[in-house]
Length: 319
Ligand code: NAD
Image (cartoon, rainbow, N blue to C red; front, side):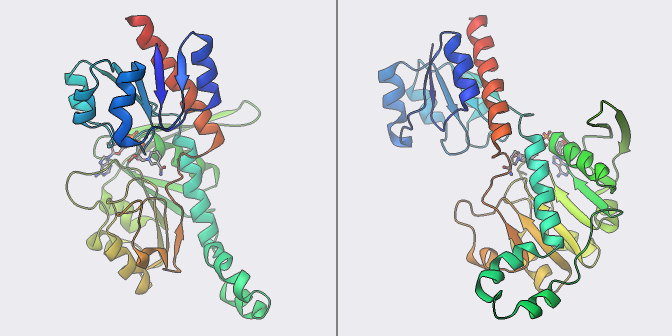
């Protein structure tokens, strides 16, 4: 079996596959050359992350292709239903990066509450000449402990966020039309465990009662999950974090809410117009920004590599 990992694969996954006799090539092939290369080299499996797209045309052009793997969660770059209708196996690694995305939420949140996103922009420019003024400007930081974390979308990542929030001494409220309740297990370094049962509530209740709101929903077919009306429901001075998908938050409404000081700041890892976010978004000092790196930790990539290797091997062994 020959595998093309076009957007790369962690060493752990490559080693596992190679030691099971699978050939893995990680040389990147340009999108327009993919069909030719897959056919010429006889690849039966194509692995992608988010960069390479696998549309109907590519699937039709590569009759030898039997397996499509997505290292990560969202499969919007793959025509999944079409591929399956043609008999291909399509697999992703849904759980591997939940903790890394959840930790990034807290990185944005904790840093924004202490103005680090702004201080890191201004210290190199004015740290030497306006130290005291900046010390004063960033004096009213806020803490996590005792605050209410509102989670919209209570699946894998939402629940991982809840775990960290509870560990930080926060209250958690969550909304998810498809999850009624969840048991959140906290595991401690000394082997102790504690379970917390959380029953979800309405979106309105989450928005009205939370100091911080974070989104963990998939891409939506219609409309924003958080637009102007939802932002109006939020507490004055609340914080919004989006590390889910561009397009679930209305960026125009968000900029308006920040300019009006309705929200104190927001953290964005994903953007409506990726990979070229709007300049107004990039330049706004009340935004803590990262370039879609939620799953991009060494640990998550290793877990993705291992999970993907296991999926390929069980596919091969089932043939
Ligand atoms: P999941 O499927 O486990 O959970 C998503 C939950 O959202 C589901 O329980 C679903 O019922 C709920 N949901 C759907 N529509 C909703 C709505 N309108 N309101 C409230 N809840 C709704 O998925 P997950 O693994 O937790 O991933 C969540 C999101 O995170 C996905 O969009 C994924 O693409 C994104 N993600 C981002 C990164 C990153 O790099 N920033 C990395 C991985 C995943």
